[in-house]
Image 1 (cartoon, protein in one colour):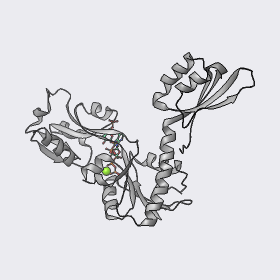
Image 2 (cartoon, protein in one colour; image 1 turned 45 degrees about the vertical axis):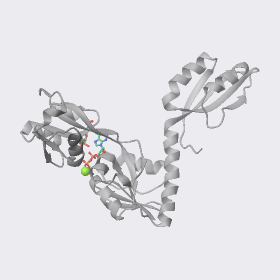
Image 3 (cartoon, protein in one colour; image 1 turned 90 degrees about the horizontal axis):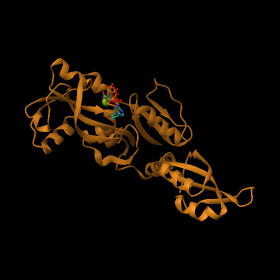
Image 4 (tube, helix red, strand yellow; image 1 turned 135 degrees about the horizontal axis):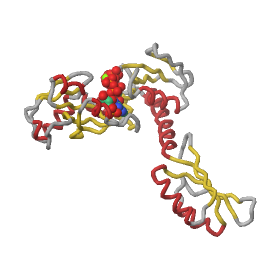
Length: 283
Ligand SMILES: Nc1ncnc2c1ncn2[C@@H]1O[C@H](COP(=O)(O)OP(=O)(O)OP(=O)(O)O)[C@@H](O)[C@H]1O
Ligand SMILES: O=P(O)(O)OC[C@H]1O[C@H](OP(=O)(O)OP(=O)(O)O)[C@H](O)[C@@H]1O
Ligand SMILES: [Mg+2]
């Protein structure tokens, strides 16, 4: 049985649970239970505070875990990373009171900065030759300037609305983060095999989430041209339509390139274009 540690309650929790579910793994979830065994895969889930996850994985209390890169790097455990997961994207930023005359990072020399990420902040300031006083606090960092605790803050930003609500202005980006899967580097072979099975499923889910299945009708004399414009796993599928001279083309396109491809194939004569989500994708 492989043990995975995920955040009990917070910004990582829902998507961590979703990822496990999308891998076809079932479990009984109750917000009061701190541990659950999956029913159809050799996995046990531990629900923990996110800050504790890198330490537990490094010590082998949990075999693998899901945590924000910001916490992982802050704790000096980046080498545990196995896979970037693409959710809970955010940044660690420096912010100052909105009315402040801040111009460059040098203005922070000698200033007090409140943060929950002293190591990441120290490394950022050191690289720019800035010496500031770092006050480490564990939460509600955005309140610090308004209660006279600090001149600036360094905290997680996503939409920026917490900064705005607290009269702050983002001035420097210190670190970019997303959720990552981490693993103990010395897993016994049986656990390593379970991890590989899990990774195989995660890759299928990730690939599918970026891809769309596309179906379209094409005049037979345009099949070659449209096929050249369509990316695919191997080559597009071509099926005859009930109407003479027409075929249906099926393929897989990446979400990022999607609109550009649609424009081109439409111009080349494609009609009746349907785009549908893909649940799993194994290549
Ligand atoms: N607003 C946000 N948008 C996207 N991701 C975020 C956001 N805030 C935080 N994160 C990411 O999610 C992680 C967990 O954030 P959260 O605010 O739930 O942590 P926490 O309050 O320290 O939780 P815990 O109680 O488990 O210690 C962060 O370390 C960061 O990687
Ligand atoms: O830029 P925004 O979209 O406003 O998000 C940023 C906020 O989100 C996180 O806190 P969260 O809401 O998770 O609460 P917490 O303080 O309990 O961690 C983070 O610590 C910021 O305060
Ligand atoms: Mg925490």
